[in-house]
Amino acid sequence: MKYGLFGINNGIYAVPELSASIAQAAEAAGLESLWTGEHVVLPDPQAPPSPAPPQFPMLHPPAALAFLSAVTNRIRLGTGITLVAQRNPVVLAKELASLDVLSNGRLILGIGAGYLEPEFRALGIPFAQRGARTDECIAAMQALWTQPKPSFEGKYTRFSHIDAQPRPVQAGGPPIVVGGGSDAALARAVRIGQGWYGFAMNVETAGRTIARLRAHVDAAGRNTPLEISVTPPGRVTKALADEYAAIGVDRLIALLPQSDEAAARATIDALAGLA
Image (cartoon, rainbow, N blue to C red):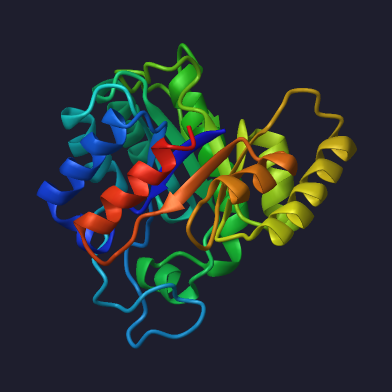
């Protein structure tokens, strides 16, 4: 089992000194990865399904992870998740390639289609197009990362006779981990991902979702493995980690507590004792 931490850019960890200190402590303890959350804006007033009040601070993931890459050496850096449908894929490809270079190939690209309609409205992007835009954005970025002379012709993005250097350190671009429990998200993970990510899923929910994911794998005839990551809704214990391992989970990404630094360090110590 690999162990990571979720929320290194959010809430109290939006303060650079604390974020850096916790990242370094996680690396020293032997944890595998650090993960960001992402919302460009949050609805005001908060209303379901918004995950946080509008005043909750979230550093933008590429900036936060670039900062953390400079104060760490080995720990992997994941976006949990990047809402690619909200982005210009040409600009995002440059941001992520730059981050992969600056971190010496430590980036894991977690992606998702998004679920907050007010956020899409504020960005001027039709909410109903988010799935199609997600798929097209990934394809366009991979063209920029892999083709000797990049070109792409899609519904929302078109380019040719251009190049974007430097390319990512990781051949073909950073590994893609698809988040979400809908059938569309599971099918996307099977189609384009190297992994799948279930957020705030208890063992029962994760088990049911992984079973559905495996059905999508069988239907697509995929024969390469998908790495399974889950963020549990509460504290991670040895017994709980064993339960997740039994249903096929490869990585647990624990929530960073929002109370204080001492609680964060206690979480790191607990995970280090399991690794």
